[in-house]
Length: 180
Image 1 (cartoon, rainbow, N blue to C red):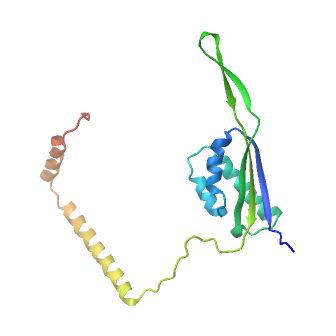
Image 2 (spheres, one colour; image 1 turned 90 degrees about the vertical axis):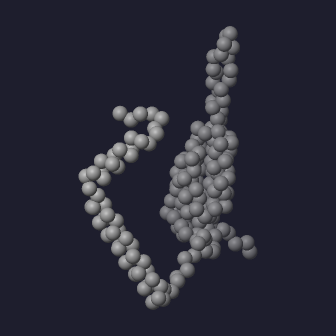
Image 3 (spheres, rainbow, N blue to C red; image 1 turned 120 degrees about the vertical axis):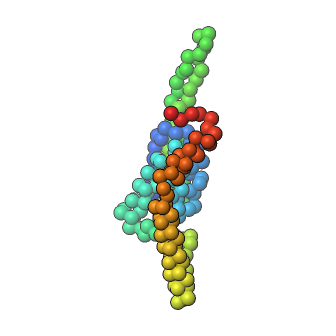
């Protein structure tokens, strides 16, 4: 007997972005875990990323609320970008001519699937800290504190005459544009 996989889907129709441009973003998240796909879409500079992110979040909500699927196990099994109806307009040009403008639309369909397995990319190893390492960390912190105190003392010792000489240095530096 064939075992059915648990899937859920969401669809976005009549998106006013060309399918070719939307496919660039869609292909970047195909087959990825939803958390990874979401992070890709959030930081993607493409205009199609925002509506696809909204669609992905809608599909996740469908999976958790309607299908009662586990959010940690969801993977994008397929995402398809199809061509929607094209709005045809005309742009007037020189000498009485006109050129056509095709305003393309897209239909995007996303299917999420629940898969078994651990999808965490990096497992954080639990390192054991020995007493010698703890003492090293404390000595480093003490040295940093001492250095910061020495710097504070040095800055407080600067006299009025030294402050004036520091201001004079800025006049000697070449600047292409004069600051007024």
